Image 1: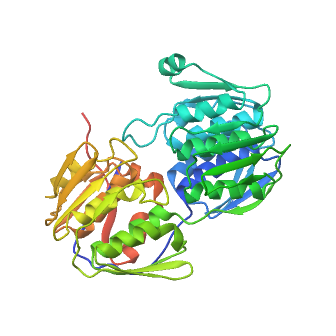
Image 2 (image 1 turned 90 degrees about the vertical axis):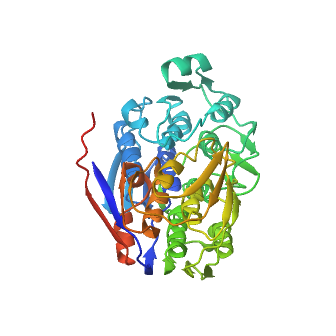
Length: 427
């Protein structure tokens, strides 16, 4: 076990290059199961979730080679298994994409309910609704609840109309995967519009799929007989970019965030400007200059293009040191404020009622806290960068799931942050 030790008070300045998008990578890699040929995927982030999903594909029979640290070669031509390894599936949420990809490739899927960060119920009922509409037979709810495993099978998926009852990123991608090789046309309505959904669709299209409308309310998929190999580069990670942008404002710093798509960052940029920071957009980079004073703002998380739920913890940490009271409402996940108790250990004045947090700005003091989840852990790092004294962050395996070399990137900007062994003894 390892932990991060952060000594606050440093003004962060310099340049940071953003890695490939985690949420795109963990969907595109299983999407390669649909391809009859060799895929070269570039700009893959070197994070734990990528290592896990690659390992799962290898156990299913895929051959995966790392051509360099950020480029992988995937050959799924020998995949004929449909049972995903339970212990690995439980390590990450995005493992549910194996359901749609395996249904499309081998017409069967046996996948345990996924794991990952625990911040509330995240049902897959809309995924299963889509599979059933396409003609798959899926485990009954009582069976899934009892075994924790989803089994789906089909004699051949057939295009249809699917209306998602709620806007779901996971269901949008999963149904899109299943429909790519289905016979006929599938129309998915009330879909999510996140950039990584568009990236998955672009990947599939580059391999020969016929998908239109990704990024809008309706996606149309004209099924094709097969997909061919090819090369594709993953988009930059908007959440990693947002994390470093917030860090600039939090420390009164001046950071040029490189390898970003500024349009993907508009809601984050707008809120940072409200806090008093200066945000300058360029073709593929964004410069954020903090003033040393943080103004309070109100935020409500929403599906894209609204303010992303994955940036909520980082902003709450920032607002914990604001000059006034802020209100943050979480409309996506029901239990995403678990990390607030850790911020309060640092002296934050935060009251949570249902899905709304009221944050009264105050000074933060370093102490020992833990990463309760991936983005909550990023919030703890930002809090540590602002705090007086030393902050120790444990359970950083959550951070490693989605951030590549976070401490090294922060050190290059002038932060005093180090990874050390955690010698705690758990009783």
